[in-house]
Length: 48
Image (cartoon, rainbow, N blue to C red; front, side, top):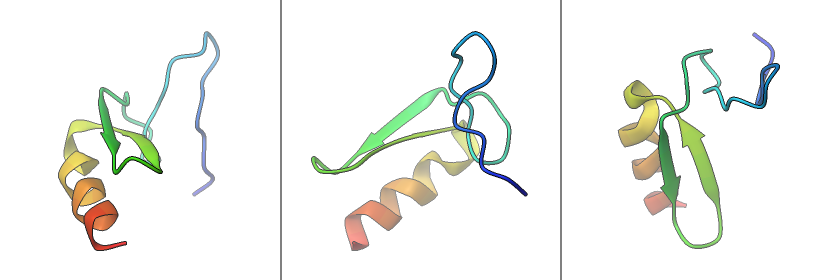
């Protein structure tokens, strides 16, 4: 699977290809993810 941070038109998409409707940030890093990966990303940032 290749990473695809933007699609034509500039819409943000998650690494899984779904629309990135959630933004997760720990102050230093901000990730755009879909609803399925938002919680996982938040946990990963908290642990980092």
